[in-house]
Image 1: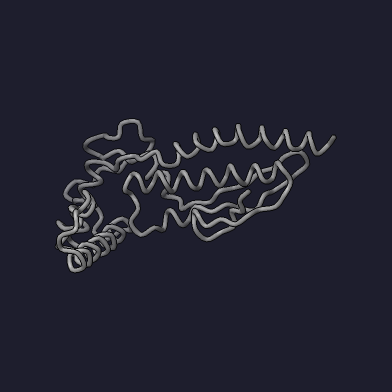
Image 2: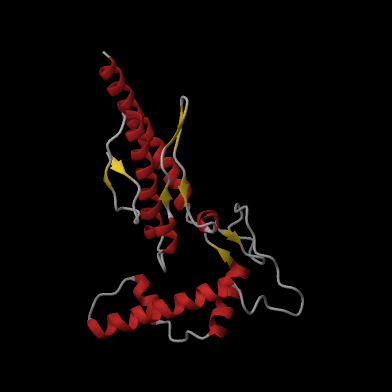
Length: 203
């Protein structure tokens, strides 16, 4: 029994309510936990803003209808489905695509994407240097090896990387889509159990 009114994806408290309300909370809990886990497994967590933005609403009950909303930063859909590169066309099944830059230009020199990439470069580069100072002989992961290659955090580098991503595309993760499937499986068990409890309580 889990209360999803929390600040972190996995920071839950006990929730006391009617069987179907508890079941709905538990399904939403499973969804949020799966989405956060999928994103981490895909190695697509940088600032943590996307994971931390996944939050549930209060349960809304209207007659025989009960619902709960889950909010998330709008760009989740691009991370989930990917974005087609204007040259590569990959991922080919993504409903989103980068626009080809105008003739004579290489894309925007200042954008939210460039800003985000530069912040990522600075954060990852700092993490690499911190780890090297702390444990020079530490066995490094593939992400840590990539971090070690980050030596230039200039805006010009962020612009260059942005151009490459727009050209080649942004890989999809299915972190949200797969979480939906996980939640559906949990719902079958949770609501079956809630129905049993409700029947017993009515006897």
